Length: 334
Image 1 (spheres, helix red, strand yellow):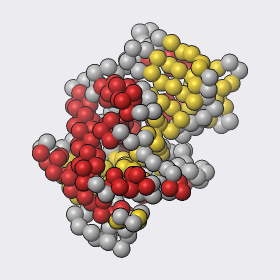
Image 2: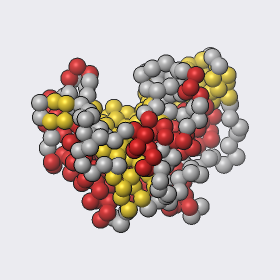
Image 3: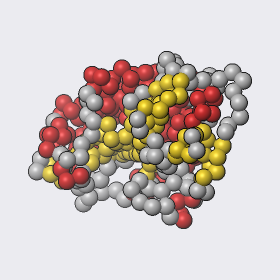
């Protein structure tokens, strides 16, 4: 999908995060229709439609669509990919067709769908004045490497631009590193947790996919009971971590940053995903990890090395942080 077609839809999603067209529960909405399936609790798509006041619920091929004037959600039937105003999210559990009904995991409803549709209802989304920027890797840990350079260098370049742009907007900015030096993941987490009224943004670039993978993806911490992206569930995945106190705020912050980066860069959308990266697990603030493109992709490698792209990406993150800040201020005024 080209960016010209996608942008109006993403802009509406950004408006949702600004509180301008968020959905309220429908008047006299009925109770949730819940189903227990394979050990998980689900809600029906029909009850989601009624609760949020969607006007239509239709099946189109392999998609289940909910729509009103402000928001369109496309669930992949039998899959985990979900598109809200054409921005891609990856659910923790598949959408299940069962006896004429369509089931959405209670975890995905509470930890993803609701925070995006109703950001002003997030209790932990409080006003903040500090942004902690974490340029990934550094020193003896270069990150991804290609013939043009190393990831650690590009992470730092974007982070420095982002710092300048945020300071111009009167944020207090903390960098976990401001030079090419190694910090352990624990050192990054410990530094971040010294501050109050903050959010945490870890800046990275990607690699893999045999040179064919491209685009932007954003990670938030997996909720308790949800595995790290790409692997099976383990017993320790059920433990609550520091970052799980911010589950709803994490997804709202991720939506703001991810959607704005798509608009500004025009790069493909690889989705908002769940993971158990150490920096996301340990940081107590709303936190995301952004992968701003693939160093292993021939075209994106050149983009990432280009100062203009670095400026564009940093500007998009700064704009998104302002959107999220406005959303938290509206939350505090409720």
